[in-house]
Length: 92
Image 1 (cartoon, rainbow, N blue to C red):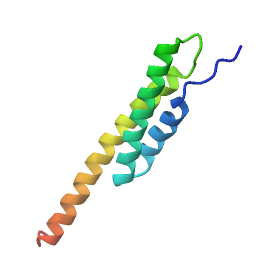
Image 2: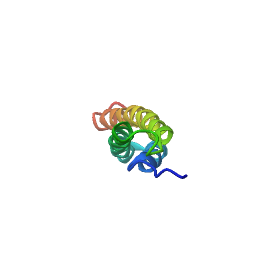
Image 3: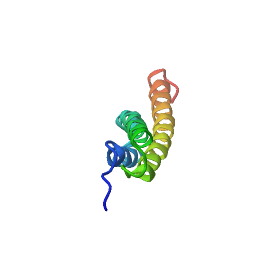
């Protein structure tokens, strides 16, 4: 019998992948939304039970990818803002 996927499991995985691939502030926002969706999916699986809902692996992968995407985009955004700030201040 096929168990339905937890609401938000697939969305968290997709958002996690996109947060890693799409740069700058958009990637940060997608990563945050991915973490929220993963949390919703994992709570639903925990409350309903793994015998009723599937998608735990996708939700965990989505959470991990979202966290990685947020870290990478935060570093890139900080570097970009530093370069822009140095350029405006006459640092170049």
